[in-house]
Amino acid sequence: MLARARRRNLVTQEVGDDLVVYDLTSHRAHRLNPTTALIWRHCDGRRTVAELAELVGRGEALVGLALDQLEQAGLLDARLARSAEERALSRRQVLALGLAGVASVLLPGCESMTIPTPDEVGRRESSLLRAALQAPTRCTSSLLVKAPLGKPLQAIGCINGVCPKGQTCEVKPVVFVLKLKGGNSFVAEGLACSCVAPGAAVGSLSGCVPVLVEKVHGGPVPDGTIGHVVCVESTKCDGKATCPETPTGKQTDRVDTFRFECLCK
Image 1 (cartoon, rainbow, N blue to C red):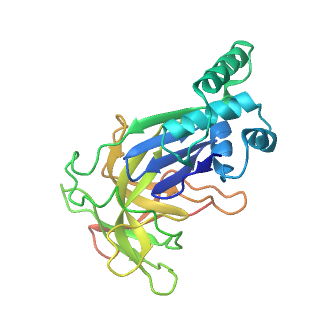
Image 2: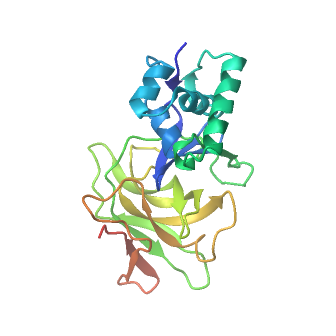
Image 3: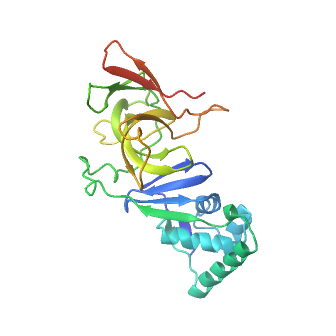
């Protein structure tokens, strides 16, 4: 049997040159380096190891080890028919390449971690992290945030949202990859404007959008992150424009209410 990449119940987002894959079923996040991500994207259930190696410009030993890693992470629908001897041989060959000074970015890499379920972290909506990834949206509107004196920020509405027919732009819980200065990244939860169908419990992000961060999984984060609004680049800005790290905040006609925007520059 040939390897076929799993696509269902997965959230993917590029983080630098790597690809983060979040499994909505097992609540595990997998960070694939460029080599492993490239191989995973081309696993269609028809290509052999030799064909994948030729396609991605890597040796068969490297491809074999990457497939072993992807299988162990649960990112393949169809398992690769390889004996224990073949797997051990791939590992020895790749180890030899590493000792020979081959750049680590060319070697397969897949780091995995378990993310606490909503019940384990006391979330009010147990469906959030288990929800399937929705189709891409176009809701890149401003986020309206209320800032009561001495109390946490509250995301209360969206301004100028544009959505496909049959959907509306609303504040919804979202799961996303939070990128911080220094190259660290975490799976996080927050509130953002998202195009959703009637009755949808959760949303998804598209473009460069403001998100009110509620929770961050996987390690400590700098002060001023949780409970604050950040810009999240779920899809790249057009051309040479970039998504800013910090949103622009403007006070509305109400003293305690602000409008946050993330504009590609």
